[in-house]
Length: 112
Image 1 (tube, one colour):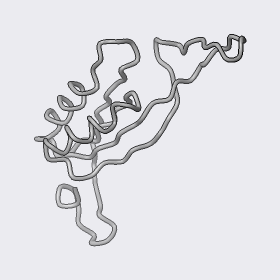
Image 2: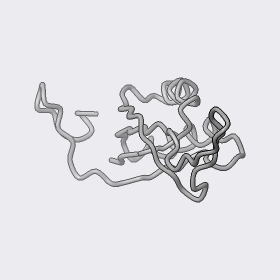
Image 3: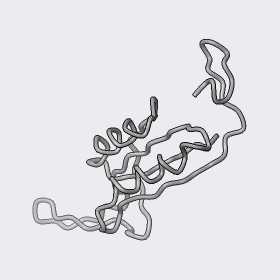
């Protein structure tokens, strides 16, 4: 099993959710986050004053999937999130040792 964590631009969330639904993802977790990468933020002008925005708003998506579905999920996220511009985001893939559904006690792939 894999935990796929994607950090994307917030306005791409609906498109990513639809793409994940098409590849069979039935559940995911969304978190609004802030951060920066190579982009290092940017400067903005507000009421005549220039200021630096160090941390940019992003959306973090976490999806637990079986090993067989991992590549399809990664492809769906990367294709939909890609604008070709800096700051499109990243996808992190981690192995999951165990998953437990709290309500029923189901384990691992049955809990997904």
